[in-house]
Length: 374
Image (cartoon, rainbow, N blue to C red; front, side, top):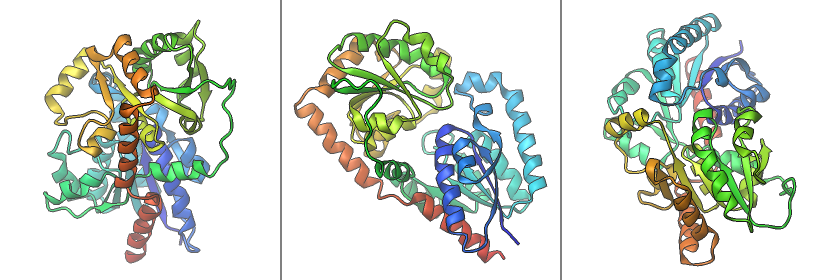
């Protein structure tokens, strides 16, 4: 009988890594083609999963958005539990998205369902008490940041460091020939990655547009997130010469000499392409006030967190101005020790994360546990 696997990813990055995981689960099936049902997105569906709920209906950013949409979130959790119960999976794979997935994990553990968690919640940053829940209800935790293995070890947990799944995605894209971007005119490219949520785009993109106007010798290209409607960008780009390229973020980064990046996974993606960057963050006043009291980390970008020092400049809240962004971009573009030092640090970062193969390792672990329980 085919093994039944249920996967939950609640954001665009989870869908990317979930898609690679689904492909590996099929590739390692060894004649036991699984049935995979999921909450995810287009990449997981393209890989062969039956996606029953799209992450676009799940993504709420920040404390206030979560509170305002709490009733919808709770309905989604109950709907997910009902769907899992009907599907009767042999294993449940949870990808990041902790506010939702840890609730599902507690419920599924009580039902006796085998649980793999891929991409640890950032419990080392805030809500450290969650580690005790994870230890109790998760059968196997697969972490993607090198310091997480040691951190969990302090709580008596053995977890698997599988490397970062972005290296898989980048390696796949790197096999393709580098095609020119639309409208190529010979000027050096500056990549703009203003985020994948309307709230962050509305806060950061207008500043990026003003910066672009100060650098006529550079070509600014906005890498649009596939889940964001065109009008979310168009509203802020009127009158500018910024090019918009959709669903080709990695191509944009492969062309870029420098980048302006909203905080999040994109900061690490940019770094892994060896592109010098400046990190931008602007949240609502209440979200920032709450975060300062709950989050116990020195940096907001994954690049600096992994390296344990400031490798890329972080411009946060009041520091995020057109003048500050322009000054930093000028240093990133210029030949000299500042740019060269950052390039060396970004190469070191890539080495710390190990080679590609995270998706294959997680799939192998899932299959091992499934076959052991047969």
